[in-house]
Image (tube, rainbow, N blue to C red; front, side):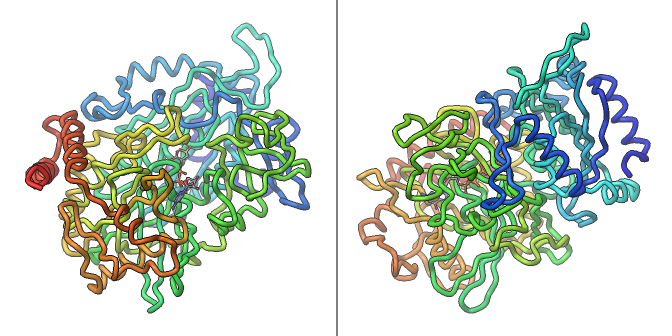
Length: 600
Ligand code: GTP
Ligand code: SPV
Ligand code: MN
């Protein structure tokens, strides 16, 4: 039991003094706890139990309408020196932040239970895995963590006793039920605070989160640990923590390829990871849909694991047509958040079915009909479900040793300029593609949806240190891997034609891009050299069976030198922000592109 470990007990006691909960519950990770806490959430009005005949052991949660996505402007990287957080992160001096947040934490759990959740990211004991312990006053967070991570008190205690480091993570929704004077108030279905702090201390590997109960703000194993803290660990220890999916694609010839892909939030990772290939003979198995940890190993190759245990997937747009594997995964044991409720006690969201129900209760709990001016489900509404429930899950998806990576994809949501697929000529050029990624913003974070913003490696909100140093770290990993380095590709499923519609069918048809990548890896496709990288020739790309016309194809790969010169000038302005810390190879690549585009 982690309770018997001195360092753990002391830490819990210290925080209990500050947070002042009424009681402490040490979570074991059992079915009994799940049943008790989900029932407690139903009784308290946070959860609605869905019709058990339609969706056994499943629940709908409605959040406070102000607590629906990650809050990037309230996310802080508190390194000792500001330049180590870098210009893309909000920085605060650690001691000042500790003081400020200790004040907010003081008494924050009065009248509540503090849960202690011991968990592992990655299978317990794996050589790329790591443990953590989260404190929280939210039973919603406890049951979500039970799906998203491996919660197991005995196994965590064993790892810590064996000498493993553990990451301490403190979370409060910031809604005490008793104030300093002893006055009580009753609870609300979704307690939270209008002031929020999502704080990482990368050097001491600590997480403090306050005021939000939702997603990456509150399930601290996910973005806070597995990306922000883990990226800083990876920099120090020679590995990578990435905002990536992980799949195994097997060709009609029976060759298996392991592919990772970094797409920004709500840009298609879950859908790609669960793809049913539309190209005959291909098989795609899911290993992960959001986060990947990768490490070069003794055989010289880069090995990847998915440190998570479940999927926290975007609901809208997930339907039988687009993602049948997700739909099957959602049959039972699911927590849905901010989707709509049907009259027969099931869930619905935009894109689930082509027919729209006549009447729903929308994500805010109000009556809804097809005439309503707002969507029934919040655009960032999500499902939480164990990975093992996806029919596409690879049987060995949680193998502790991980899988060797063959190809890495970088992609964003781009209406213009960026081609369907291009291969980087070298690791360095691939790192440049990752570093200069931009994407139209989605509802996954607070901000203006649709606005183009730079999102290098899809890590803008998740890199726990200076982004330029992170690029440098990638370049170093490339040096370590040498000839064994995976090949890197830029992809874009979202380019639009002159009529404004998507040029590429996407989803299961993205298997066609995998097919071309496999041909490249096997030396079976020559491709065409361009300034940006190698693109497919139409005749070597499996287009048959799609409605993509020759004209669409031309538009999908149209490379306008003037537009690309603008892109490159914009990249130069972006790089300038990092001053001397920008790695020389990226400056070089930028210079080459500028010269060649200016001549084109
Ligand atoms: P996070 O969980 O926020 O990190 O997101 P994600 O990258 O896993 O995104 P997800 O797969 O959930 O996709 C988000 C949205 O993109 C959904 O509305 C999908 O329908 C849409 N989408 C995914 N793949 C494609 C595609 O190939 N083409 C098009 N047009 N849309 C897609
Ligand atoms: C993302 O925003 O990239 C997510 C959802 O995967 S959250 O866990 O809320 O960060
Ligand atoms: Mn994500």
